[in-house]
Image (tube, rainbow, N blue to C red; front, side, top):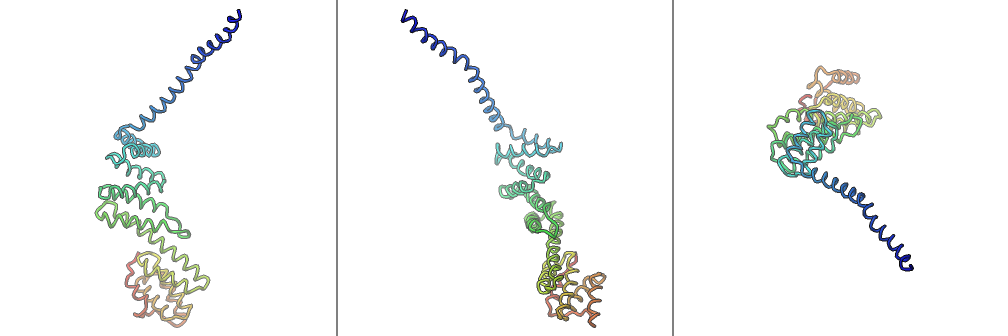
Length: 288
C-alpha cells in the first residue's frame, strides 16, 4: 500500500510530462510555421527575377504609382547589383525619385550612376537628373543661392562631357537661369549697401555683376547703380563711363535714361574713359 501511494504522485508527474508536449506541440508548430513564412517571404523577395521587377517598376511608373515604382527599382539594385537590369533600374530609380520630389535621393542615384557607368549612353541622362534636382530647389534671390551654384556645376558637366546629347540645350537654358539668380542675389546685396550709402561695398557687388554676369538681365541695372554710386562719391569720370557703357549697349533702356538725367543735374553727360575697368568689362556684354 505504501508503495502504491508513493507511486501515485510519480504517475501524475509522468502523466503531466506526457501530456505537456502534446499541449505545447501546436505552439511550437505555429512558431515554426511563422518563422518559415518569414524566411520564405525573405527568400522570395531576395530571388525575384530582375526582369520581372523591372517590368513591374515600369508598369507602376506608367500608372503614376511612383512610390511603388521606386520600391521595385530599389529591389533590383539590392538583389541584382551591377547586372544589366540593375544598371537600368538605377537610372530609372533616380528619375522616379526626382518626379516625387525626393531630390537628395535622385542626386545620389544619379551621381552613383555616372560614377559606375561613365561611358554608358544613359550617363548623360543621369547627370541631367542631378542638375534638374538641384535646379528644382533654387530659391528666391532673397535667400541663399547654393542650389543655383550646384545646378550650374551639374549642368555644365552635361554640356562639357556630353556635348552631343539631347539634354544640352535645356541644360544651357537652366544654366542661364541659375546665373541670372546669382546675379540677382548680388544686386540685392548691392542695393542694400547703396540704400545705406555704403558706396564702396555696393560698387563691389555691382562690379561683380558687370564682370561676371554680363549676359544676364541684371547688367543694365548694375551699370546704372554704378553711375549712381560713383556720382554720389564724386568720382564723376567713373560715373560718366558707366553711363556711356550702359547707353552703348542699351540705348533704349529706362536705366540709361535715368542715369543720363542724373548726370545732367551736375552738368555732365555720359563719356567713356578707355582706361576704366568699366570700359573693358563693357566689351564683354552680350545681352541677356
